[in-house]
Amino acid sequence: MRTVRLTVGQAVVRFLANQWSERDGTERRFFPGCFGIFGHGNVAGLGQALLEAQVRGAADLRYHLARNEQAMVHTSVGYARMANRLQTFACTASIGPGSTNMVTGAALATINRIPVLLLPSDYFATRVANPVLQELEDPRSYDVSVNDTLKPVSRFWDRVNRPEQLASALLGAMRVLTDPAETGTATVALPQDVQAEAYDWPVELFRKRVWHVARPVPEPAAVARATDVLRSARRPLLVAGGGVIYSEATGALRRFAEATGIPVADTQAGKGAVSWDHPNAVGGVGATGSPAANALARQADVVLGVGTRYSDFTTASRTIFANPDVKFVNLNVVSFDAAKHSAYSLVGDARAGLETLTEALDGYRVDEAYAARARELAAEWARVVDDAFHLGHRPLPAQTEVLGTLNEVSGPRDVVVQAAGSMPGDLQMLWRSRDPKQYHVEYGYSCMGYEIAGGLGAKMADPSREVFVLVGDGSYLMMAQEIVTAVAEHVKLTIIIVENHGFASIGSLSESLGSQRFGTGYRYRDPGTGRLDGELLPVDLAANAASLGADVLRANTVDAFRDALERAKASDRTTVVHIETDPLAPAPSSEAWWDVPVSEVAELDSTRQARKTYDEHKADQRPYL
Image 1 (tube, rainbow, N blue to C red):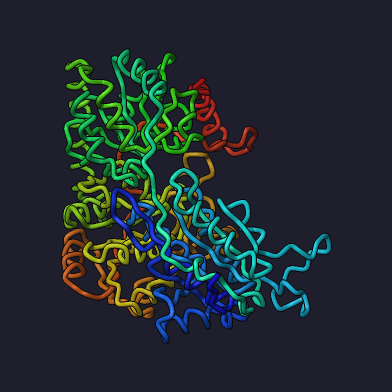
Image 2: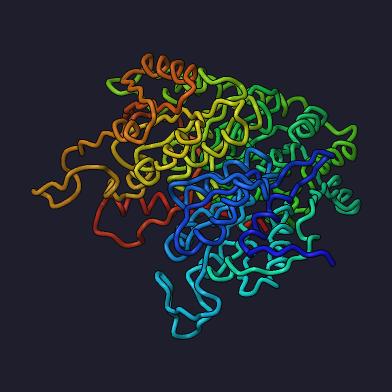
């Protein structure tokens, strides 16, 4: 057997550079690069290996310097999402705080079913220098480190204590990363001494390895059962989730909808699966959906869920599908999701499954009266959206006007990136997607701080697209560091800071729950009340962005904002557009509910009234059995 002598770090880099994915006959390098921040855990191991790969051409794995460990995982997720989960980045961090900083990003990736490989450094496997700097000393076991915190948020986790263990760990990680049903975070913890240890590796480990991403077809018996249920439907509704987009099933979805006449609603991850102006499109469904889709959902006798995991926002905390006799048919590559709500389960690829269902339902079509009602509801909602986009709110513009202006200025292939605060709700209700990749809102984890890092990944995945990052002041203050990375890498982003002096989403939620927006504003502490409800803080986020290397444009009206967006589009540099909005400006309602418990006992009248409203909605909640 031919061998080559390399350190573990060098072997990891050479292995990753030779991994490829394939679907529908197209091969892609699975790891276009590696993000990393070096410290004493990895600088002499993976750091040396990445340097050698760059200087000597030992492996094709480009290194990118990130500024925050959590953010580099977000950037990898943004890239993988744009690449339909067929590519991602590896992320390496030092031991201790560097590695544990990746936990939030790992959770986000796993919850959203997005592949990312983490290579956290670990303590000495030999324990000769224990306890090393930043090591967690657990008196119960010497085999516990801070990297164990990554176990519950990883779909694969292993620690390589000997070089001989590396091959099985890396192959196991690749199996999970390239499996649409299993994918998420894969973690391979690498003790710092093992990273630098040499070993004679079989050359076979470093050959080009192609991982074939299959399109499993639902079993015929399951298709027959599902077809019988769908043929019996008089008021069916299709809910398109992220799986439709990741499996590149948008064309199949459109043909299915046009053949059957079934209205199509979408989730946060599924927005763009059909164009907003398609005759069958009725908008988002659930707590932040459109009243059009929600009206149809309440009456639906059969719900066909394709590629959705039915989060509480999609089901409006299990209140929106209100027909007492409603039945679910779920098409999903993940059996866990396909079985939800006691559904007729179709386990398979979204595109292959929709093509199969289209054929099986040949001749079936909803009544024209029902289809016309869906179109009428969608048209009514379109008029409401038009009004929200052109509200003319003064003295500060409404957030809906900012989103509307961006929607009008952006092109069909441009990408809007968002994740947290009040904007995901307004975006799902109002945004008019014209391309499957135009809408990039991370709402599985709704992680504050994802926006700029995720936008960086989206732009790196497809430089031909303009990427607009929408970020509130709360998220911006949590993680703006990757502006520096974008500037350093000459990656052009347009970052829109929507400033409303606090946490607008939670402020509104707090008020609705009787908590009077407590602790949600960026204000001085009032010496009279002792609370944080004094004057606004003199924070200048635009100046902060400029200090990180971005060009900055300030706008104080909708017209000025439009002009700034056009200037930013024309630039080849990362540009920040800053605009202040009124957090109390009106926005349309989804006419749906979200279950956030209210204190059952309270002295405050506002809380007692909120609890009364909560109990009324709670009575509508169903188990979907």
